[in-house]
Length: 256
Image (cartoon, rainbow, N blue to C red; front, top):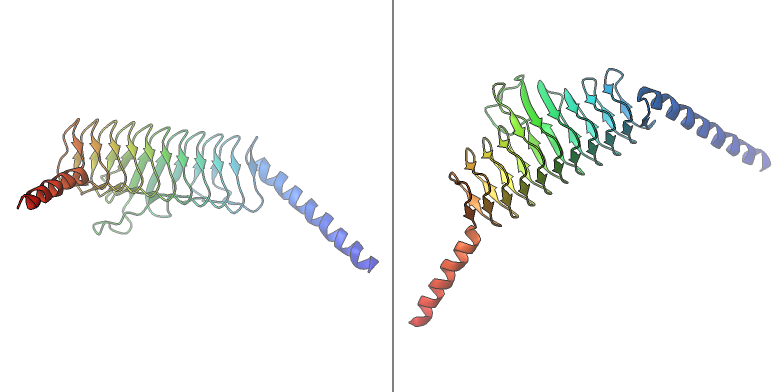
């Protein structure tokens, strides 16, 4: 029994030494930062200073991670993807894809749990092998389970500006152009080629048809479906309109 105990102690000590040496070796790859020994970082990836990469993360060969970024456990950076300084990628998020083209994400962005950003679009006109692109600006918060796709053709680009709050489960499709200082509530869905200007608010479960244009300072109420151009400063709330129509109809019926 004593021999077994000594063997177990030796195994634990050797395991701790191995873990420590692996941690030290990984940390040397990211000056001033830390790469967990359970992370898989390709030797060709460019890792900035002060970067923290948690367990079970993967960083591809063409990835570039800016200074002071944090990759939480189980997040992934794939393909030709550039992540600016000070970004936080939360657990389960996937950035980029191993397809031609590029994903550029600016500085101080937060990518939420299990968000999927910079992957192939869902447009049938996309041809395998085409270079497709996504460009995201600075200071955006992209919450959990959002999906943001690259463009559908090499001559286009999906673009998101600065200082946007994109709440949980939103979808921004291929070739959309999103401006600055927008707030999109949960389950807001933008189809392909939609243009959204600046300082726009959407309530929950808003659906915007492809090729629509939403003007600056518009407000889209919960459950609205936009299938035409929306002018600046316009308030759209189809739910309220529908309720008013039903209320008036009920009043007419009660008069008879």
